[in-house]
Image (cartoon, rainbow, N blue to C red):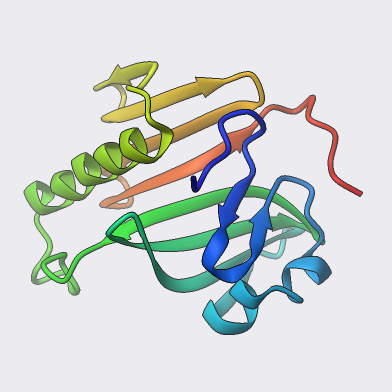
Amino acid sequence: MLINTENGTVELAAFNTFLQRGMLLAHLQQTDFYKSRYHNMWDVKTGYFWYYFNAISVEGSQLSFQLCFLEDRLESIHMNTREEKDAKTWDDWTEEKEMQVFYRNNKFLSKILEIPPTRKSKTPYPQCTFHFSWGNVWSVYDPRSASSIMGISYNEEVTPIK
């Protein structure tokens, strides 16, 4: 199981790592996942920091993670599946190829969550959402950024882990 549907925790079993909202950056930095897969960081200059990780193998897919921290606590998790045939440059990119990534992400989420999406929508952008009591797991194709991404958004009332 990658995403615990009871509480939204992401389990990276191969790295003995659990990701959850409110997790301290210092705790993440001590994990095998961080030590072996960390790629780089982007300081947004607003108190938010994005940490990017090289892909890992999950359920037969290559999955990359982007973790958003507000100051020193994990705020949200973004993910994306990767395949060799995906566009690597703008010259290779087409909307049709990117929509295939969107559909692949949706299929991946349905497989790991073992349920169909709660909601699918084409407006304003193609998206797929799985609703849970703690928050949502989602997938979207965003034509503004010309990209497809998956993520976990947590409800505000969730108490951060101390």
